[in-house]
Length: 402
Ligand SMILES: *Cc1c(COP(=O)(O)O)cnc(C)c1O
Picture 1 (cartoon, helix red, strand yellow):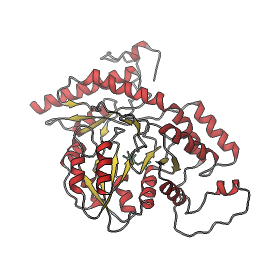
Picture 2 (cartoon, helix red, strand yellow):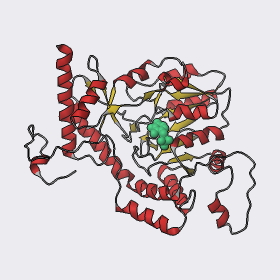
Picture 3 (cartoon, rainbow, N blue to C red):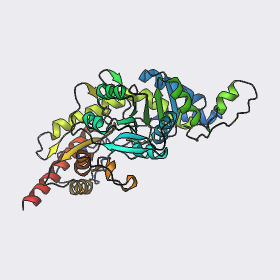
Picture 4 (cartoon, rainbow, N blue to C red):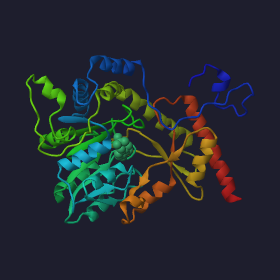
């Protein structure tokens, strides 16, 4: 992004001279890779073990457990698979209800459908976009088995209250920490809440291996079940081979192929080593947006409560009526700044059928605007995003008042 050309880089320039190239689009999200990732991947390719759950996968699991402070980490193919495996390990099935945070990527609700249980979507807090604990309590029925809380865009949910409620009602709690790597809540790391936590290493998350997922848990039985079911219900080929005997596995139960390849694990190890640096950049972006945008009347910027730290997977602003989020997003795109909606109000998605209303989530789905957030954003780009957003808001304001 840095051009070294002071004219092109000058963020306050209004009229680009014909000699200037049009500035590159400011991307909504982007991974941060460097030569270290290439070197680690090359080493795996040369090693001969490129399949899943090999030595590099084991190294990733140990490093992630150490980082989070969890007893077990199991590397899997993605976070959706991680959620599925956890629900299987907790023996959730037909006739069971699982309370799910409504405002989330539909992987959370889908995982409940995978085991033929019923997702019961519960509304979220207007400020943190995470589960509204009072509404969770009201949604518990005799069929409720557990709760899946989501760290919304990397902001942890109210885990003290959720853990107390789960204990009191005899429910399991799962943390969908897909976007939460590096987040904290009251000094505890994301990955430490409930029976197990599920992380994503998808390209749009804070650390990535392209696709990938991780389960963390302190529960030995859950860990053993998740591991077995991620590899056809048997011990992985690598650990069998490492024992040096000829063991022919017996297939006693159905299992899935949800392994993370060692090629991806190599990427993830290097990314994990960068986590603190990447988080610091994202926090700085959020702080800068606050300086640049907090006085725009129609926009409400995200706030993270003092007892937690977000991983800032996305940066979403709330657009007040009469301005329309969709028009603003399109206007920004035309101005060379990628923008999008936030995430989904699950209860409105046809795949789940008619479900009780979650008005806060429905409003966030309609009114949240995601603007660029990643660790490679340059100061000039942030100025540009702010300028274009201000101008797009001003144009919409004029249009709606006309
Ligand atoms: C991205 C995401 C998922 C899905 O993760 P995958 O690794 O793509 O399966 C699940 N839940 C939330 C909240 C997410 O943001």
